[in-house]
Length: 266
Image (cartoon, rainbow, N blue to C red):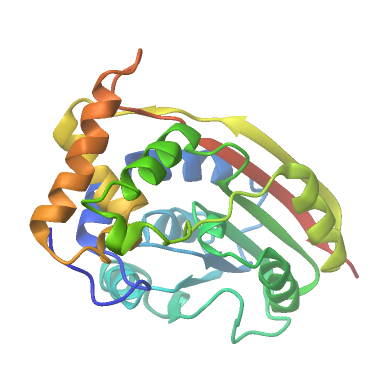
């Protein structure tokens, strides 16, 4: 388990290989879009570009800018999409609370990303500023009681003397907002026609090793990079997988998704 250089980076190759649930959720969100085919869209948190590709397929006369905090993700997405779409597929590495755009997008699409942003007031203000008047926001992220069982186990394990020196005071790197407060934040940022809601989306893997691979790539990489050795990182995810094997539905992650629909006021 290689140690990441800093917390903005991801293992893009492993993310691409293991991202079946994120891709599935994203496809559902994408199917809800009503596209004319000539829009300019922002894919906010584009990852390795799997869903960016589907957006481009639905925009024969349009353009998509894929944005991600991770340079690794942006490089992977660009390498995969530029040969097929050329300048219709642009990519930017940037923080969603400091977007380098102003009133230039017809719509913003995002899945599995907003919960990695701690300041949702700044997030929605930046997204609003990036949209043209009347532009739409269609997004999904973790919310509510997302991964509650796993998070409780992580907190308990982090307090274990074996790990507490590095993880005992580490705050959760996510923010799982509820539907009601999200609606208020969106309205405060200038959005109208706001719709928010929470839905359950549990995900089960087939083995202990698959769960360990998934946790270290998708959920716990910011925890694991704080541990000083591969042995400790391996032990941490193995212990979590062993606990999960004893559940009524073994190796199941209790995901909850926050759905967001809104439009920027004119």
